[in-house]
Structures are given as structure tokens and as C-alpha cells.
Length: 560
Image 1 (cartoon, rainbow, N blue to C red):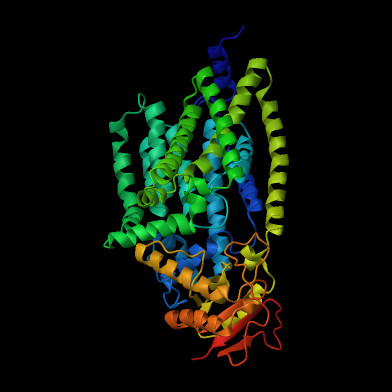
Image 2 (image 1 turned 120 degrees about the vertical axis):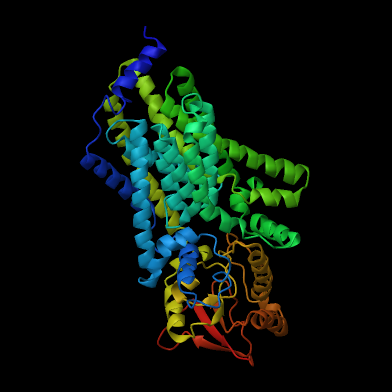
């Protein structure tokens, strides 16, 4: 009967040989794997632009380089929190339209993610095609197992670059290149201070748990210092967002940011219970597999990755404790808001699926080796199962997109882009618009400023409080012209606006128009009562015209 160490030695010789003892994959084969992973990523993401946060990030980047573009928009004129991203991608907006810039950014991000993932995966499991399998398993885990809504593969934004650098840094740590790993994480923090900063902490936890006796702290101190200095490029602007602001303004901004706008990402008690259950089950399964691997054999690389994942899970536990103890038991709302805005759940949404993607194949290999199965055949089976899984994943992704075209996806409506194009071609460049509450891409398509956008919350404290004031004013105004639209849409009021007096409507709208110098109003008939405009109004309908025909949207010019 074979001992555990003998099984481990056989796996080391057949699966996880060092680079000195096993020829590395040829450059051509590695490129082939990278290309396949890239294709998987591309198929997973919607081909529509803008996707996810692209309208938020890229319009800000365009305004950063050209302040005369949408010069009157409140969000675009707020503090710039991601200068490294703007310098990396934003300058392209001077030469290309936003959709083209989005595609250039996507291709760069997906390529970097594919390269860094293939390198990380092959460092762990030296089997051909296994990096493609693990990438698919990771995507599956993130798609179905996230708790706080985090994603990595999608539209282009700052965190995509950070995650690619994190994967590369973990790969370097696995190869004892700790100084370079810390420098890479410093660059990741410069792109996105929270994503990169949490990765520094969790990789340091991994070093403490697995590597401390083998890689001394003093030896990697130069990398820590260099990475820390680089991270200041992102850390200092982030710290300055609240600098010099009164304590009450900062406290109010924290409360707005955490509880009013982003509770679905930041507050555990606000998460969908189904997401909590799925994430909990995925975490439990990973803990069992990772613990079994740890106690069955000594495998430094796998244990180091799992220790990194464990660090992210510890951050999640801290976030839950802040929510349940500080917020609900001690009622320390101000302190809870101050702490919860640091996205305690973000990294584990990515890392638990990552741990599963690598631990599951390793666990199967342990079983296969013990029972005398051929590891190569096991790899083929995994590849086949992964191919079926990615078909199901991509299919479910497109199904989700197809059946989620309500008010929350105004961008998808066929009448949306025509009205935006008309606005772009027929209104002054500095005009300010009051727009439908649920759209996310008005600036992207119409290239005009908005009084308010739910999606576009600023990052600096004073602008956040101003954003909240606009939220309240706009919602009060649009209350009087809104009708219920299926209970799935948030912030829809149930009162019958047709029974409200015309002077109430005019007073509410005029408050917004006068305070924010609004010149145009865009009406969405799916959420607006018919015949809301009364005779004698000072609002003149300018769209649709006789030639443009649009059954969904109307544009009114506001006359003084």
C-alpha cells in the first residue's frame, strides 16, 4: 500500500515537475493556450458597448483629456480618482470614438488577463490545456458563486488591469520572485488602490502562512518598498478625495456611498440571500478540498495560492462582522459606513472561484494518482467537461442579457440611440439634460451633460453629497410624471400622476430646472404617464420630429 508521501512524489514527477526537470511548453503552444483563453473571455462578455462600467470610466477618461467635452456635467467635473487608468487608456479618446476605445481597451485587458492566467495556471499544474480548463472553471465560479457582484472579465476599466497584474504577481511568488511580485502589486494598486491594496495584504498573509520560513522578509524588503512607492500614485489621489473636508461632510458622503448607492456591493445584510448561500456553499467546498490537499501532502505552490484565497475570505469575515456587530448590534452607523466603503467582499468574489479552479483539478489528480488513473486522460476529461461548461455559461450569459431588457437596460432599447444621436446633432454642446432615471449611457451616446445619473456617483466627499442632493431633487421632480412599471424596477412610485395637480408638477420640475440650469428634458414613455404635459406649459416638444419617428422617447426644450 502506497504512503501519502509516495503518492505525492509520483504526482510531483508526473504532474508538477519543476521547470528544470520538465521541458517547458513551447512558445507556440503557450500562445495557443493564451489565444483560447482570450476567446473564452471574449465569448463570455457581451459584444455591445458600453458594457458594465465602461460608460462610467471612459466618459470620465475622455473628459479628463478634453474638459470641453460635456463641460457642464456634474460627475465629469468631480475629482479624478483613477488617473493612471486615464493616462493608460484615456488619451485614445482624443483620436477614436468611445466604442472604438472600449474595444481597444477590452482587447488589451482580455489579452493581459489571458497571458497572466495561463502563466499562473501552468506554474501550478504543468499539463497541456489545463490553463484553459482552469480559466473556464474560474469563470463559472465567478458567474454563479459571487456574493457581492464582483466581476473581472468584462468591459474595460481600471480594475481589469489590476487583476491581470495580481495574477502575474501570484505567479512570481510561486517561483520565489517575491520582490517582483510586490512591485507588480504596487502597479496594480496604482491602477486601482482597493483591488491592488487588498491583494498586497492577502498575499502577505499567504507569505506568513506558507513561505515565511523559506523566503525571508529582509530579502523581499526592496520589492515591498518599491511596490509601496509605486502604489502612492494611486493611493495619494484616493486619500485626497476627502482631504480638507469637514467631518460632517465626510461622514455624510460615507453614508450616501455605502447605504444609498452601493449597498449591494458593500453591505452584507443588503446582499441577495441566494448569492449569500451560493457563495457560502462554494467557500465551504473550497475549504474542504484545500484542507484535504494541505493535510494529504506537502505542495508548496497549491498551498500558497490557497493561503492567498484564505486571506481574501478573512477579509470577507471582517466585512460581515462590521455589518452585523458595528452596524446592527452597536448601531455605530457612522463608523460602519467609514469602514464598509473599502469593499471587504470584493477580492473573495474573485479568489474563492480561483481557489476552486486550481484546487479541484489538484484534488482529482491526487485521487487519480492514488487509483492508478492516467493523469493525461484525466486532463482530457476535464477539458471536455470544461468545454461543455463554457457553452452553458455563455448561453446563460446571453439568456440573462436577453431577458433583462427592462428599464434597467435602456441602452438596449432600439429607440434609445436614435434619440441620443438627434440630441448630439441638434443641441448645444454645453446643454444640460434631465434624463430618464434608469439609463446609464446618455453621455456616451448623446455627448451632453446631465443634471443627474444614478450610475455616475463621484468619489470625492463634497461631490458625493451634491450627487445625493441631485438624487433627491430629481426623484421628487420625476415622481410627478412617473407611472409604475412592473415591480422589478426600483424607485418607481405607485401614486397616479394623472390625478396630481399641474402646479405640483411644474413646481417640482422648475426647482430642478432653475437650480441646475437644465435646458432640456428627456421623457421615457415606459415610465411616464401619457398626456402629462398640460396646455400652456413652457416646455416645447422638439423630438420626435415628423422625420425621426420615435414611439418611446420625447425631448422637450425648456424656455425661460
